[in-house]
Length: 313
Image 1 (cartoon, rainbow, N blue to C red):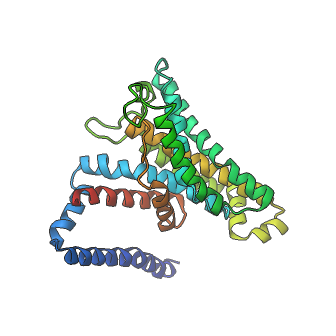
Image 2: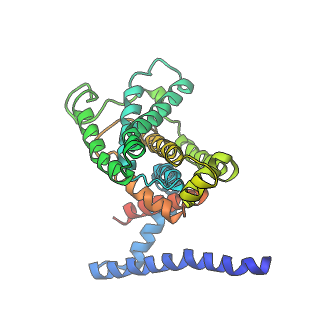
Image 3: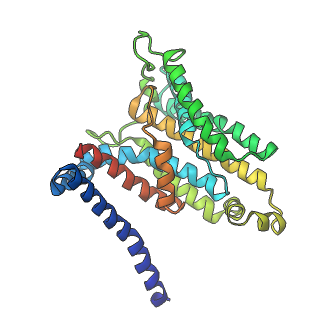
């Protein structure tokens, strides 16, 4: 069996290293065309992502945290054959809900306030995706279109919130006041921006991996995604219920990502809170082959690239 596994391992290694090498070659080519020296630029990319513990923890892993959570959100829906491309909108809904709740929790201790803020994000994302779920179940309208269109509504909702009901008390800037100190995620180490949300992302990836591979619920989910007709005829599985539930949980996880970003990084709501996390997370999920623990690794890779790109600038 070890001999049989060797070619598979070699193939997997090549599948991981060849695209990376090609990517570096393309990067070098563009740098040359733009008139920049290749080695100093690549060195800056490395230093910005891995050059020090501060760079890795405060830049790479902080960038990776929302990408991991949102990548898991896409993975959860995709496993049931439901393609949720509205993660940006659900992220925005979760951020709005978390901000509104976080502004009113100053009198509560952190151990109570933080779970409430995170729960608000989960609920906000789930509510935001409810309409696409109903449209799919009742009218057979694909969630690809409905979730995508709701992204634009999500952007507009954030703009309305920060120039209207959630605008800061001075009414000068298009942003909210800072959420209560007790509602903020604690830092994991002194002198680092890495916060408890990263641990939450790790736990979520591990939990989702166990649920998908070790439970009847996960098996049913994967069966619907892999062969819906067989699941319906042989397993007597309700395709609409399974796919609808997967979409709801996918939206909830995306909303959790918004709550984590507000409570762990920005501490306030403002326009362009997400620099495209929701769309990048789809690439993270696909690169991770929609396996939660590989999505975790892919999210960290993308986070490192984001941090390194900043250093290259």
